[in-house]
Image (cartoon, rainbow, N blue to C red; front, side, top):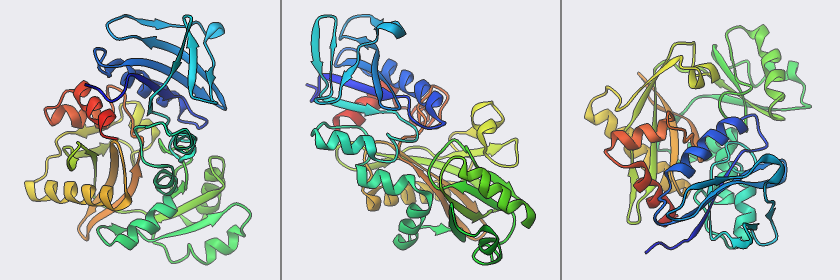
Amino acid sequence: MSKYQSIAVIYGSDSSEWEVSCRSGEFVASRIDADNYDVFEIFARFGKWQLVACRKRGAMRVTFPQEARPEVDKNDFSVSVLGEKVKFDYAYVVQHGAPGENGQLEGYLEMLSIPYSTCSSFVSAISFDKYACKCCIREQNVVKCAPDAFVRRGMDLEAFAKGPAAGLKYPLFVKPTQGGSSFGVTMVKEPEELIPAINYAFSEDPTVLVEEGLHGREFTCAAYFDGSSVKALPVIEIVSDNEYFDYDAKYNGHSKEICPAPIDQACSQMIQNTTCEIYSRMGCKGVVRIDYINTEDGLYFLEINTIPGMTSASLVPKMVRAAGLDVTDFLTTIIENS
């Protein structure tokens, strides 16, 4: 017997990742168990939340034309559809970027006491900010972190380049502290490229992380809670055709995502154990993917993805399949245990 009846899958976002979010959300909605749940797809962007489709148990998916999409009532997280008022009792959040990944949406759901699939608003806010997250991870002492420097819009960039950033070894990666899919990210090879790269990152966020580049193999691993313990999925190695795993490599087929990664059991176990340890220490919930670079000097943390991509070609579904799990059953596990 399921704990929930009406599942709202929330996708779209206020960030540059909104289109990827839609693809992820549509995939998740299509794979949620149609025998156990009523599924309602909500497109949410810049405060406008509309029902785009729904699928009742045992029935076909019904879509609504853009001009006739029912509005979600944010007072009680409900919608009036086909002559019936439906109050959602669970939210599966698939918003990449704000407001889903930075904790704002989770805060709203917490105030209404509505269960949801992702990390808490507090954990989401920390994890989404790359600098805050690295500071927290560094204190945990379970994985290495690359040297970095932090800069905020309005600071003297010339002084920053000559001061905090001067001790970093090139190449550098300049990243907005909040955001994903490599929007606003630049690989900087020469000092004169640094300030333009920072200004470019400011187009995505007012705070920027400048980080030493690492030489090694890139891996990613996801963890989730199955009701009794934290479990890790198989490790994936990412081999980019480009200089690094940028937007083009991620979404335009210019990378190889090898699952399971061609590494020995000891290395795989080390990455999985580290992922589970970070998941537990950070207080994560749902399915979370963590990215790493493995160098001669050891394993380095890159970032946490509290709402990882969930299209049919995304990394987590690949891991789920490689683990011999059914995607629908996996989503049920997330829904019933988060």
